[in-house]
Image 1: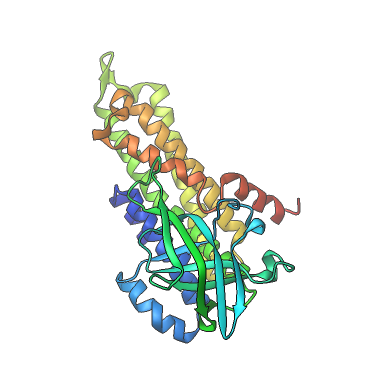
Image 2 (image 1 turned 30 degrees about the horizontal axis):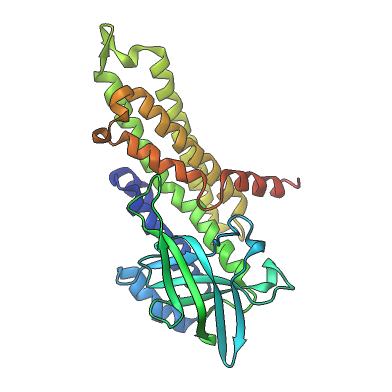
Length: 312
């Protein structure tokens, strides 16, 4: 409910996105999988905003294909030595702590061979690489993280050695369920903006909302908004009540992200030439919406997840 309200009231979708990446992909895994010592060390700062978190799994050669991960963590005395790099990491250029995934047993693959680590800025061997400029969400910093002979203690393991898949699944379930709640708020705002414009903009002697071509777009926006809201709230409920909410999370993420993109494009179309102008901020909503079908798993990946749950 809070994230939906934030998406509605905050026009800076990049800020909302960065907050969600921090909260859902870093804070939640620490809360759900961290040791008591890790919770005491990180959660106060992550919750009061004095620390910024990131989630680092994507690599230059492995986005959706996490099995192709090349970052390695090898035992080193009473700790681990990490080498590799991550890319497209939200909050990466400014993060104080990152949940970093590395292969610890290549023979076991993703399930059993992947481990999550808590890595802090300032550790020797940990650095930020290139910062990227994006089509949308421009106020959300995204960049590379580089690990060169980074040594971390055994206490840096989040969860258990080989349990990285479980940590990742938790982050993705929460992110896919709740990140899209902010999209619902954005869709609500776009709907209200489009209705107000359609009622006041005059063409051919009448408000453009009287034309069926415009009215139907707005009607579709309303249907997509309410359908997305129901899917999202059901998925969020199941996070608390079921052992696994992956199917519902994938459905909510798929439906809501694609509905947001359609609603944003329709809002620009309804506003016509004014919608293409920066001052109306409708074009900004469209640019920001494009990424929603890519991050947290592409729409194609969500359909694959749904198909697998259906036994296909």
